[in-house]
Length: 449
Image (cartoon, rainbow, N blue to C red; front, top):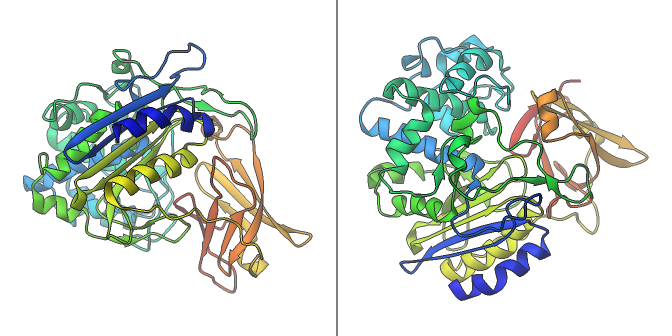
């Protein structure tokens, strides 16, 4: 594997317009690593295998670990109300606030809006203030327990539970209970620590088709650290974290097995992700399930996969470009050669578009950050995506418009790929022939018209 990575990584990042990538593979008891490209197009600093990248929502596996350590100590019960640990916990919907449990949060089934990237504090109180000041205003978009809808804010609440029970800020818990026991050498839990390493910056296109530029910000808001706004590391250290679940180092084997038991189905929008365990994504293959998580920040994307029955762990970290297409080709080869897993082909528009009822899908669907408006014009479907808040313009500076094609009677797909893949959206309901929610980018977003 080492030779293949050395011979192909540079070629592949060039093919997919990725400024830099770092990959680490654990297979057959050995770790192979490779890095290529530049960490920052403004400075030309080259990537090395020790370079650190933001891992985004892969952080959720670290937050899950902190919670499950508390479960193992008998200090948290996944099915007790959150208010047992945070007595002042509030949401816009009081019945949900009183009933929601850590299990709901770990499985993204709490139903309240999860994407409020609202700054609070850059200090140790960032998570506390987010739960106190931001979370109470989050609308209930889906009934509690009614289905999977990806929720960043829910993991901030989990991080706050760990802070309160341990009496320390989240970033210290990550280092004390995970990084230090695993002897990780290239991990930054807050931005200041990234200065000790060769740190990647994200790269984005200011508008579709434009050349990549250095992202306007390096990290997302500090208060969302438990969801994935800050944690930064090398690919090798992410592999060491993965090996802790192969070796049962951080948690006992029975607890790890609980993490990988299916808890909720994920609506089919392509790929091999169909279920979620406790914090962990469960992927399907003809050889059985494997596990992991993806992560994205502003211009950085990370991918982590664990195949326990083959003793394989793979981490791929990138800083812009068509990262998903790189994942398909690079991770696809690695998983095929090390674990016999074939990644499914991405969904593409059908040669002959299917039929879908316009009244089912046409409408305005709005969450905290983004508004998706689907229209029918001259027999064609169109999607307009707009930022609702100024904070969202960091990710979407200008509205985007995409032509859509019916994939089947309940799903639409973008006619043109973006970042190497077509966006697929499914529709929930209907009531009187009209969908109540759109499922896009992992979120159930309610119809507002």
